[in-house]
Image (cartoon, rainbow, N blue to C red; front, top):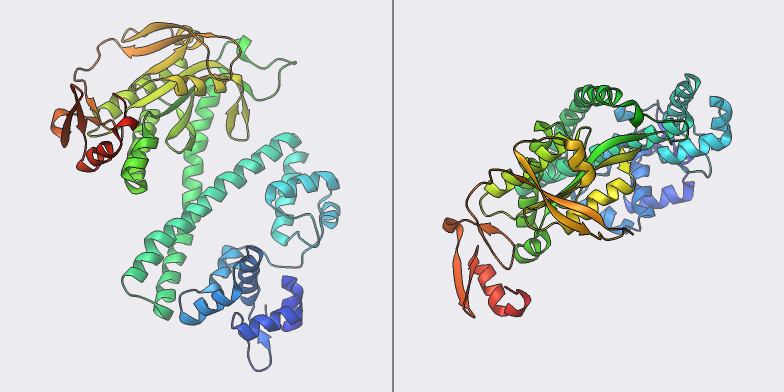
Length: 455
């Protein structure tokens, strides 16, 4: 690639020459006396287009660039720097001709890939991905499977890329700025760190994918050993399989965040996430997703699901100054779709967790029956309950260890933290009852509005 004229830059970026000249005057682009541009200016224009399309004031961007607070040459990470082939773009209709797929299917695949329908939107990299998809289709992989897998890749790797950029920003760029580094030195050191991080991407992807693949294959072998009745029949949708679904969260996370602030809540959540993932790994469960303090896990045998729920309960109970966990577990057929599990039985598990009290593990008759004999676990009948969103009542049990650990903790009425005797920071006698608090701050909040916190 040689130097570019302004007309060539306009052709590659889709921006009118007049607009590029405006950005030159603003200081967002640079050129030599002959008005020649570097190939990296293609990516620089992409960054400017991104700011414009997201309603960012370009005068503010120009001022940040001029002062050394912003380096929009980071746009190089959008394209060739990552090994993506450059070249002319084409329309979706032309891409369909080149690849040899129906236009409607190319449109569907491009939606998954995040490629716009209008104009010359298909790049050389997009075209290569379409060719890979056609190879899979030619090998007999159904269209629905190719589309689902593409969505999983897009979502999962999009999260990976976001984490890379966010963590780099907070833990590298901002720390360099806090140390007083700025201007060209900041950009040089940042670029050097970015180069090292990008070099890790390939090996890390291969490593974690191989570990995940090994785990998924073992899970699949377990499914093949399931009773014949559990395998899909002709009238059943693809992707249906038997599983235990668990939802677990912290019973007082919202008041905790309100009382102690986001930073403390994030610390509690980070610790809770570690406890959940450690227990899941111990009992061969899979963490499907996390939304706030709530985790969804799936297991392909019921006893492991019960044991994992008890493990999480035990671990959180032993944490100092920590809120109580609660969970709901159900067994039944679920549908696997795009890396997630959906269906009525998933909803039942979620509603069980929602109905559970502090330290409670609520399970259904189906889960209890499938779990079989667990000598160290007792299932206490709680009767029939009508769970939110369900039409009929279901029989509910509480799973408990037969040898419960001794030592009941007090509960801070403001933040919901559970406190051992040596963790109590403040006490208050009110109306013949004693309230215990984790901090003076929670005591003051209680005193300001005691009616908000009934005994």
